Length: 122
Image (cartoon, rainbow, N blue to C red; front, top):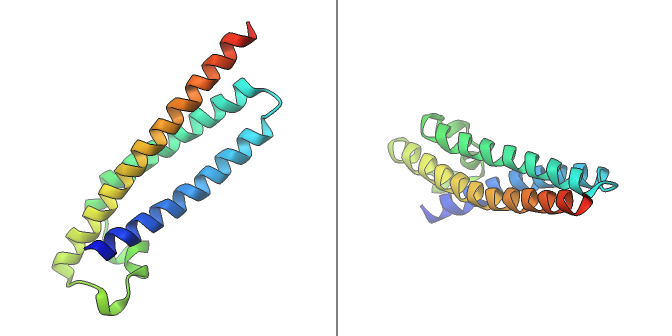
C-alpha cells in the first residue's frame, strides 16, 4: 500500500506542478497589474482546488486499470483486482484531498494579496 501511496503522490504532484506552471505563466503575463495578477492566480488556484476535490470524489468509481497510478505500478507488485480497486481509489482520494488542502491555502493567500493590493490602490 505504501508504494501505491507514493506513486499516487507523484502523479498528483506532477499534475499540480503543470497546473501551477500554467497559473504562474498567467500571473507573469498580468504582472503589470499586481492586483489583477493575484486575482487571476487566486481564481485559477481555486479552480485547481475544485478539480482536485472532484477527482477525489470520483476516485472510488473510477476503474483502477484506467488510472495513471496503475500504469506506473510495476507488474510484479500489482495487487489482486479485488484489493487493487480499493487500494488505488483510497490512495488517490487521500492524495487528491491533501493536495486540495494545500492549493486552497495558496488560493487564500493569493486572494488576500489581491485584496491588499486593491486596498493600497485606493
